[in-house]
Amino acid sequence: MKALVVVCHPAADSFNHALAEAVRAAWTSAGCDVVFHDLYAEGFDPLLSASEARGTSTADKTVAAHIAELRACDLLAVIHPNCWGAPPAMMKGWIDRVFAPEAAYTFAKGVDNGDDPIGLLRTRAALILNTGNTPAEREKNHFGDPLDHIWRRCILEFCGVKHVSRALFGVVATSSRDERRAWLEQAGKMAREMWELAL
Image (tube, rainbow, N blue to C red; front, side, top):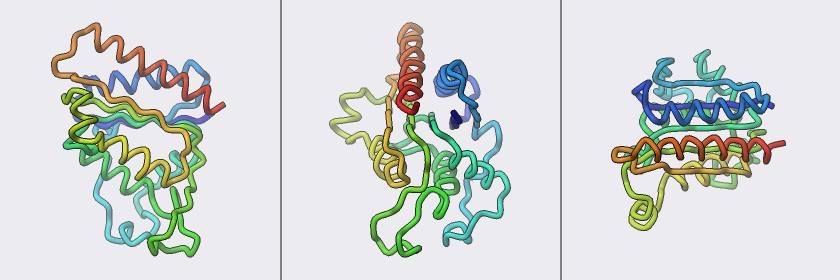
């Protein structure tokens, strides 16, 4: 089984990276062929070109490789912090460039006229892990948990991924070592559950 893990956080020693490593370890121990990307460490270019914005296939070899890995994966994990209710800028650029038309989705008439999309991804299950400093109750009741809507409905379901699991870990800034250890265990457990679901 092929798995793709993508983490986006500027600090290499962040808790986001620890979560990504927990997922990678779980899927590696399950026998998956895991491709791992640290967008900041790799210097991923998040800037969508004018031709890409118009639906033309990318001329960027790195982006093309990421698209191929996304299209090939059975399991997908994305890990990043909550930035104003959205993914951080580099992750948003990765989404814009990699979840590309005619790669991740298409339309029956071949052009977006506002009709229903046709998802093209073969990904069986996706795991989205986010960190934040807003208490979970306030995130849900006051803000409506926009990251869940973005990933679950606006991106993954749009592109044909039927099984999506997500967790928001926080408050990270005031968390204890025991809390972070429990969250890492939870991330590993969720990864194993998604692997079983994808079998």
